[in-house]
Length: 304
Image (tube, rainbow, N blue to C red; front, side, top):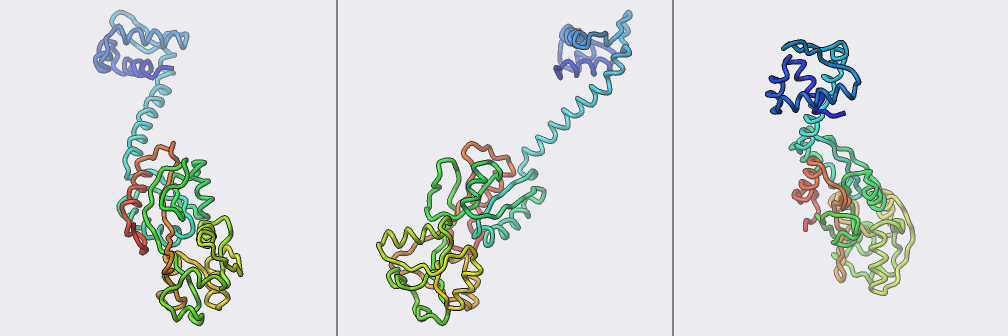
């Protein structure tokens, strides 16, 4: 079914004239006549009675009119809907965030973004970084905001940008002997009980890589998949742990836990926003991406 034929049919019926319909449609009269004949062939019935100079709808034509009007109205509405979506001010964005960005970056950034784009609908999925990258790969989220131990986007499937780096610090109890120091070396941590995340996490991989690179042995006392529990165990002096400063800033500033920079081998956790390389971002998704990249002061960590 050709929409142009339907539009010609509806315009002829509305104006009662082939010539006036042709003029309104910026077509020649023979072109309009051909379209009507083609439509009549498709329906295998006459749609207009042509008696002298008068043109009137047949019964079949009368029956067809409301259907054609609905079709043309839907086409107009679809154009309006797409045009609205082309504007960054409306639409939806599905964002996947890992633990650190989800807790420390997203709330503030969302608040600022929605001040500028109040009609954009945002849905947020919070999971481990590895799971967020899987969601981006399968297009289940539009954008991923994840932590990485490397400053570059490390997977070929993704486009994106590194927007923040955050110091990795050692967190200890206030009653721990290291709490009297202002910094610590990696070697000083060698024989101390470490509380670490599970092996498939970005933070754990970075810690393992650090000790292996320096060829320094280390002692894992606990593997725990819960940052809040790790903090509580540190407070109880059951071990020490590595944290991104953003993750532990609140506790450090309140005096609950002491944090120490690593003096001999500082390293960082990088926050990145990513999307699939084959994905075309909608205007609202692109607006969120650009906003997150440009608003480097959203978190209170260390911008690049």
